[in-house]
Image 1 (tube, rainbow, N blue to C red):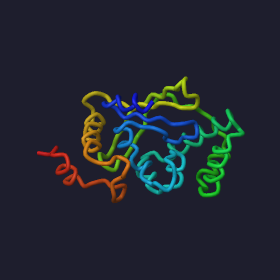
Image 2: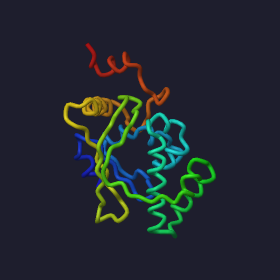
Image 3: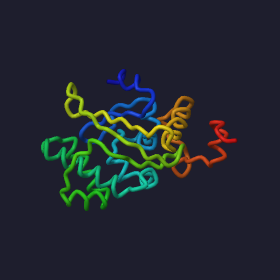
Image 4: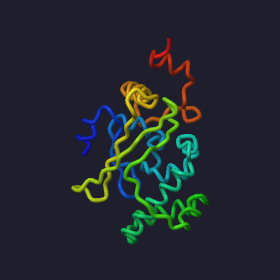
Length: 196
């Protein structure tokens, strides 16, 4: 799977398991999700990041939607496999550490997300509105490949190209510093020589 991901160089792609662990990514996927991957103290998990990392409120401009989606997907998996100890432990951790998670978990919302749009406020390239498609991997039950795209010649397309240049010169798993590490526009210009 990693070889396939590494061959996908033009768009960000990641693989999640049903517990929302980010288990694999291509270089551009690691760059896109750099804030999620930044804390080495725990395995990269979208729900854990969303509810326990204060940077998530900046990374997800519509944090409520991201939080609702994460809980609904975990709730779906709990219905599929109620005896998954790792999932039970994750839900227990999030329930004890986050009132926001606890309230959403009690709502019992269940839904799958196979296609749609995600809105990011990326620390390096700023605002990104990307389409995504999720594909189950039949050979690896429980794993889903998610690919992100932008319309040609759109601001998001330009931002993805900028992100690819950044990822080629940086360690994309080391999130930038600062308020989500966003460089000032003058720093971004100097970094990528993109300004007049």
